[in-house]
Image 1 (cartoon, rainbow, N blue to C red):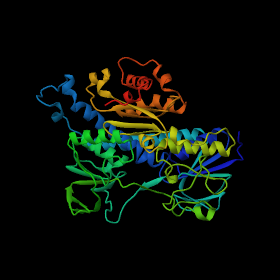
Image 2: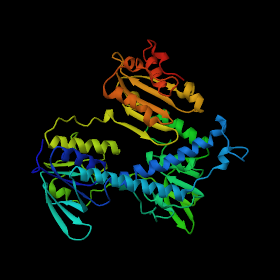
Image 3: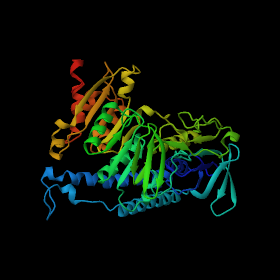
Image 4: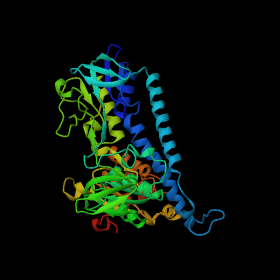
Amino acid sequence: MADRSDRVVIVGGGPGGYEAAHVAANAGADVTIVDTDGPGGSAVLTDCVPSKTLIATSELMGELAGSAELGVSFLDHEGDAATAIRVDLGRVNARVKQLAADQSADIERRLERDGVRIVRGRGRLDGPQRVVAELAGGGTETLDADAVLIATGAAPRVLDSALPDGERILTWEQVYDITDVPEKVVVVGSGVTGAEFASAYLSLGIDVTLVSSRDRVLPGEDADAAAVLEEVLTRRGMNVLSRSRMESVTRDGDVVTVRLTDGTEVECSHCVLALGSVPNTADLGLAEAGVLVDDGGFVRVDRVSRTTARGVYAAGDCTGVLMLASVAAMQGRIAMSHHLGDAVAPLDLKKVSSNVFTSPEIATVGWTQKAVDAGEIAAETVLLPLSGNPRAKMQGVRDGFVKLLCRPGTGIVVGGVVVGPRASELIHPVAVAVGESLTADQLASVFTVYPSMSGSIAEAARRLHRSDPAARRLP
């Protein structure tokens, strides 16, 4: 255990910062967070919490749109129930911002309960054991530290040819000020963020065009999963422009024009830019303190979150390791446990589960099909469509699948993919199997509820027990 003479200063109050603060404070250290945006950082205030709150509304809209198949209709309405529903985007976004503020306040109360001091201002290193805070109210405060954690996050990448105006040309952090439903939205970028917003706005009944510079949506995700999502999105009416690169975005009054490098122009009412992220590491005194950053400005860290400067750690999106709130939180916890001499397991990215909150959702954990195909790891694969699952049939679910990867010989589960409703919840048993090195037979032997979506996970595991490899990958 630490004592109050062990001083920890954390620059940034996002998941990496506040989770690290809890660990250090509970171990008895004197902890200070220097933060500009508010507890929770962008993950709570402008990114994860707001976007998933918006998506929750879009999911409800999607479920209502399919209600007729399940025998549900609206009173005094004939025909397709989907034509009788609409979204009040002003109310949705007001709820989004309120929930984000409430979550930030909850985090602040928990930090204060643990005795963590929060300094409002911008922190900058003055050597490896000192942080100078430029206070929000004016002036500065110098904080000496035995350990410093940099957790400053990242910000949306913007281009000079497509500058956001906060009204009709927007980054993903600016969309929550929209009060009226857009007539047409162009989303530029088909990575996770772009796909999530495009899917959400489509489910809200908005005309959506997705500009993708790659051959397919979600180029970094499982190819089978991405193919299912793109087929669903186009079936529902989205215009996906593949192999199309944005050249510029301009605005003339209420009309926004997205110009592509091939000369094509797409007009819309709003454009959402999802062009990736840049780390918030400029002018932090990192180089002077001996902290190495890469060419993209991301802080170099090892698997226990150490930087190249003794006593200086880093966590979260500013490291570029894997831009997930869960990874940021784990990096922060690992950093403090390491500093305080507690037992710590180095970060293992092959045990991280992640989710793309599209409709359907795509959840993954462990080794990927791409790695298997490239010969990086030997693994056997089974893909089981959800269309044969009894619960899926009852709920009118036709799209999606469960995929499991296991080692030949031992049968240890090393990866998995779930595509379907609430895939973020269904991936957990697979994540447990990967994290605990369970075999497919062990996963298959666990009771599942009948009928349930999770039954497909056990069934896929049973298929991996079959001796004929040719029978293990289903059509």
